[in-house]
Structure formats: structure tokens, C-alpha cells
Image 1: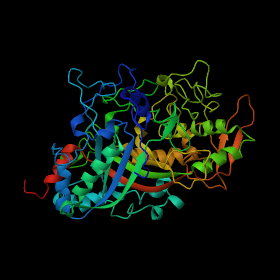
Image 2: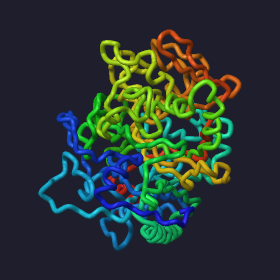
Image 3: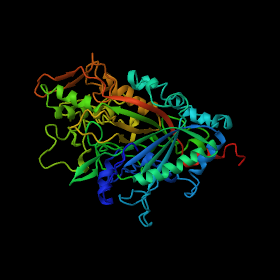
Image 4: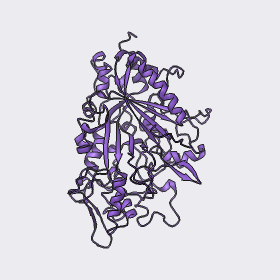
Length: 526
């Protein structure tokens, strides 16, 4: 970790509500009665990597970027991570439930003795160059990823499609990212600084055994804190000052409990590779492909000072906090504009269970189709348009689920102090965008909804309009239009720069436990 200060974890009862909003799933009791009935087979939770389906709610994370040195030793080491022998090596975390500190999921056995939440969670991603370096193609000539051209091409090759240009272009990425030596991502979540140190040391020693892997770099994240009653307390704030982790992706047959809202649950094949998928063929052989997934790892630097200065520079047109809300689609405390367009403190309040329970456009066309409450071009409305007719879905009140992603991440850098804005310390976000099809989900959202003005169907946006928060902007033509009621002229915000910069990216395959064991035995004669 880049910071030495201890993170003080709240009691388990408090963590359930607090950490449950940190880029992961909720722990609320309320549940839609039919949200978990899978249309096909039951998800094999003990074979699926945990962070695909569950939010870990741990305050610390470390991402190790590795390059394969000795392939046979590297394959053996991967096998040790799923051997079941914790005394030999830390083990890959699966999607099975811990049942401590959070409500058990709908598929969990309530008669079992609850397991203790572990000190750490561990997960593994492999790039296409990594699969080649591990000699998968050589040892299994029939291996096929024919539905997944983006994964094979890699993040650097596809960068322009998602707006990673200029300062965000691959030639500017840190360390070995995008250079062909970025083979394996190992991600370690930890409950405390001591646990992070202990398991990092164990992993580093394992990587070096037999010269299996060389460590290129490690990137650390930490949940931000704020002072409560004079004590540093974990919070769900992220750079730019917004409360995060409110809108989560609900999955049919998923293991977590989700707060009910107007959105239809997603089919599991959108996040776990399954035979019943409608738009891809599972990678072959099936021992390698079934129950796996794909994820895009990203490290994103945020220009927090530039964003705050931008808000203030437009205060003659609109109050800075209202502009921040219009840009995001929520007030910074998490209250959505769709439910409270005038204030972040509505009379009577809004319960946490209702913060995501709204629609932009209903099936009959009612709601907020013109964006008077929440602008159609706002960040939140672009990345999850809900019932808004958009590119890829043209019916009011319809589902945009086939393009949804699951986001697992954490801030990096210390908590931002607005009284000391020019501290020179880099801050940002890092983590994974998880999906079964990088092309149809991650790349579609970034390419068509975030960085394109034509995404909004019947609502015509300015042709130069992009996502005002994460879009790739040119100050000479950037524009964000805020519609006004009663035929009043819209407020036009112009001349702003890009507020984020990609520092690293990798397209990763997230193998199942079965797949990791399969890889480990290749070339061993077993």
C-alpha cells in the first residue's frame, strides 16, 4: 500500500451497509421475489471466481502484474492456487458464501454453520499473451476463442475504440501494460494492512519459486475514509466526491441479495460463460471455457482538482453542486436526480433501498424522456440507460441488459481534502469491468454510449456531446447541454477537458477453478 495509515474497520453490522456500497453488491434484506430463478441450470458457485458474482467489501486491494518466466513452473504454481491446501498457497476465492456480516444469498444453505469471513480474497486473470506464454496453444492445439476477438487482440490494440487516445493511449501506460509482457493479473483483497502484508509476502515467494513468474509491478487501492465522531471511518466516496456502489447489476440465479428496482435481472450468461448464451460460443475445450468470464482491468487517474475548478468556473450559469449532480445523474450524496431533481436533501428523505428504484422512460413513454430531471447525456444515464430508447435497444421501458457490465474496483491515492487541493498526489480508480463479451458489453458501452452523441435514440444530443465525466473530450468542441423546464433555453456548458486518464489496461480471461486445474496439468503427463 502506498499509505501507511491504518484503516479502521467498523463492526460487522455497520460494514454490511457501508462496505456493501463500495463497488460491490448490496447487503439489503429486501428482495424481488422472482429475481433469482435461473431460466436454465444452477450456477456452480464453487467453480466460478468469486468477484464475478460477489462484492467482497474489503477495504484494501493489491493487483500484481506478472510475466511468465518458466512456463511449466508457472502452470504448476497456478494449480497450487486451487489445490485446496491453504497451508501450501493462498487459494483462489470462489463465489460460495461466507455468511458472516451480510445476509446470506438466496441459494445459500441456512442450516450450515456460517463460515468466517476470510482475511483475504484472491483472484486471477490471464491475458491472451499470457495464455500463449503458458503454452496453452502449443499444448492444446484445438483451443478456440473464436467468439472473443477483442480478448485475443488485447487492450492496446482496441484502445482507440473505447476512447483511450492521447494521454490515455497505450504508449503512455505504466510499466508493462500493453507491451505483450502483461501475462497474468493476480488480485489480492485484504481485510487489514497486516493481512495484506502477510499474503503479499506469501504470493511473492510463490511467484519466485522455480522462476515461475517475474513480478512487473503491483498497484494498490484503499477505500477512502472520513472523520466520524473524531475517528477515521470507511466510506463509499470515490474521486470527484460521489457516493459510489449504489446501482448494482442483478443476476438471475445470482448468489447475492439485491435491492429490488425497476430494472430486469440479467441472465447469468452475460457474466459467466455458459452453453445457453445467445451471442457467443464458449471457448474450447470446455474444461477451459465453462464457468469462466472476461474482465477489463483498468487504472484510471482522475483530475479531481480540474473537476472542482470546472464546477466553480461555471457558477454564473448554474450552482456548482447542481452542475455536479447534472453531470453524474446523482447528487454527490447518492440521491438520484430522477427522484429528487431540486435538492440532495428531499423532504422525508429517501431510504437506501429506494436509491436505485427509478426509471428514466417507462413503457408508455412517460417519465423523463427529454432529460428535464436527469439530462439524457449525464454520466449515469449513459452507462446504464435503463428504459431510455438508445442504440442497441429501441423500445421505451425496454431492457438494455445485454450491454451491462459488473464493476469491481477501489480508489487509489489518499482521501481528497478540498482545503488542500494542490497537494500533488495522484488519485484515481482501479479495478475490473466484468462481462462475458468484451465487444458487446465493455467496448459497446464505452464506444457507443459514453463517447458517441447518437446513442440516445429519439432524443437528439449535440453532435459533439460525450459523457461529461468520463468521455474523451476536446476542449475546442466539448459540450454538455442541460435542458430546462417550461421551454426555457437550455444551459450549455462548453470548453471542458477530459477529467480522467487511463494509466493501464488489460483484457483478461477469468478462468474457472476447473480451468486452472486443467492448465496446471498440461504437459505434466497426468
